[in-house]
Length: 63
Image (cartoon, rainbow, N blue to C red; front, side):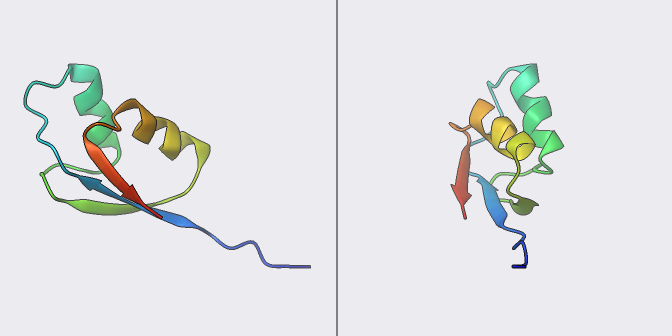
């Protein structure tokens, strides 16, 4: 049986949160991002990708 590889996604905050809605700010904070140009790494799951999709104009995602 083949091993399941745990794929991760690097998420970088490329735009400031100034002018964003409260909901967008909460989503970005829940992803673990607090400052511009900060990068975090998360498992590639449907939950994380849904959060990324809701604020995709603020983020840069690499696999």
